[in-house]
View 1 (cartoon, rainbow, N blue to C red):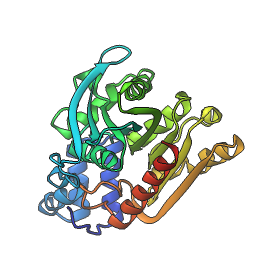
View 2 (tube, rainbow, N blue to C red):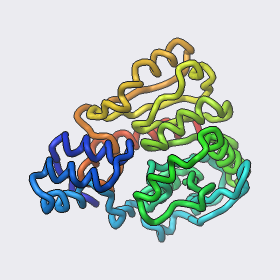
View 3 (cartoon, one colour):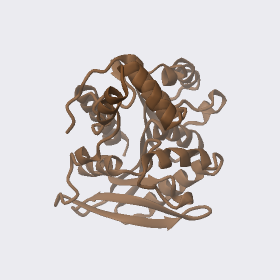
Length: 290
């Protein structure tokens, strides 16, 4: 697992702009060199800023307590790909859709699915880039492909994944969703559009349209990073709308933590204490609702 390091906030903010704007890589490296003092210093920082999936095995693929498999199933317009992790023990249980960041279905998200399965859930990590052929190996390419997704159709693929989870022989019919960054925003969209969703957990994701918030039926849990102005700008309006509509929700702010603090493959932004606390809270909600 990565050992966290503290980098100057302007460097973290630049990387956030690079990953979310998105910023052209050559422009990003030029600006990073300016902040770091030299091109050599910039390249030395890259391993700290970028995800290292060699650390993405908190729960090993071979864990005998689990069953895992890559799957495909029919979506509204095309085949959808995913990674399904389930407890090896027989029995019916709640199911969770795990939604990735804007890098697609990668080893870290597969590991998160295994963590959810180890906690007793059927966990499906859907590849939302399935309509484009699935997540490519190159992260920059994956990031660019998100702009090519059909915004109107993408939530429908998420709802198809939730419906698929209900068809599993091990399903008890109750479903939840947890997502990170882009995936957190998608969880908020699913909470709005899927009335059968029982629990929705958003890690530092974009809020849904305020006018649609009253449609939410799920229990909602929100995790925000203190050093995340871009996402936090929508927090107050979202929470006010949920209060006005009597939506059952919990919201947590992790002071001083960075966007993506839960991602233990990212040295610069991961915070173990905050990540562990947020995940414990998440599993607590799933235990109550699923």
